[in-house]
Image (cartoon, rainbow over all chains, first blue to last red; front, top):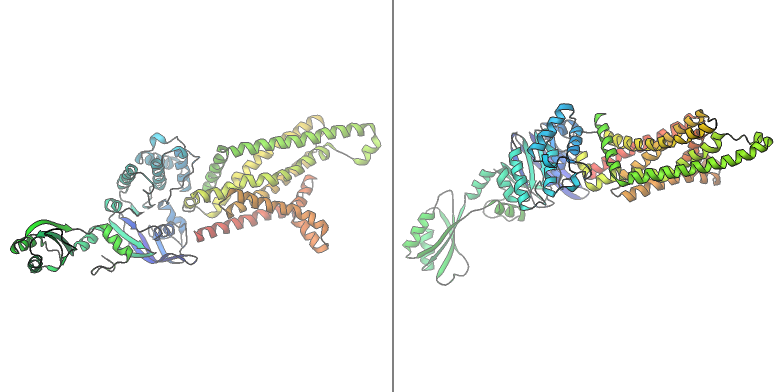
Length: 321
Length: 258
């Protein structure tokens, strides 16, 4: 549905994006992650035909954006970053204007406007000036504007930025409701958002793709090497010796200074085996007293921080699933 | 064409929503009324004197059209020098400043349609302003005989000159995201075309006629006297085409630079 191949865009000498490629299948929700200035907006602007790339190609709804921009744009709904709106128009007049720009007319236009007013919860403010609306409502107007022509592809650039927590939840729910069978690209730097709405993520950093994959496989990959924290009271050497003998355990590290008699270990185990009960048995075998055991889960945050900070722990240079 | 119409309509609605619209229209009506009544009263005095002196009257050949309407129509171009930049300054710069241009450029819309919509909107405002001035020849015609041929030629000239002025203003607006800067640039360009005539007097021959041909005021004068010269029409229309072309280039550049 959406295809990006070897896209490169420089602003003068400044790198926007360099040689990025990815695809989004029909009905999929792709989360576009990255710190500010990573190239998320640049990629989206190229996809919407707003900005031409230096090299590479992009397809929206299987139409080449550079070759036939107008055709591609007809299949597109776009919510730019900062959600620019005409403050002096009423919500309805604005939606009417946007629908006309997208080539709708007559009954089809009227139906489209009524549909998005309903689905975005804007009926009550339809006749108010956009300039007088709260930020949350304005964001809804931005979403309504993007969807008024019922496009198969939606591109939303940081749809929840600058909103308060309640409004963020509101907009997020709205997006989840609206996705239907649309293909959706959503950029954000808020990680839980990705967990909640996206099927797949692309992490972009300094203009390049740092990691890409479906959320659950990415998570499974992260869980493949499990880390367990154990605290116990007993003889440190004996404890670590016994724990090392548990099958599946790769290495045991003693963490920092022990508090009082209690020692803290970090155990790294290979594969998907659950070694926790075996570890508990090992602690007892070393005649220690178990005080705490906890599995350390790598979250999307960890993955994000690792890829973005360029830190390469274990074998994860780039996680490509 | 459909898109163009809606862009034009939105611009008009937005113009009449802002207080600038009413300030400009009011200032226009007051200024034109001032020029007209001044010309009318001085003509009344002069014609009274000439009525007593038929010899001088034959010598000067003063008609109501030339004495009253010509100065009024000439002043239109001068007022337009100030009004055209004010009318056009926000058309592109405001959209750039607010970021709404990003959305406009991602709609299935050609740059030309965007330009044309904005151009037509400001042209219709100008035509409304010109329409207000039609009352003056009508008032005059209730007292004396008005030469409607000259009046129509003058209006054709004012429309064409206005179009050229407005397209220059649009061009300046497409260059910047600051309305004041846009207005100043447009004003400087228009002023320069006025000053060319003054320069032409000082310059030596080949340069002098080039400058005279480039000056806007020169091309207006024939229309106001009732002479429709194709050279003047081509000159004024060409300014529109040139500015339109440059606006499209400017939009391309804006897209490219991001």
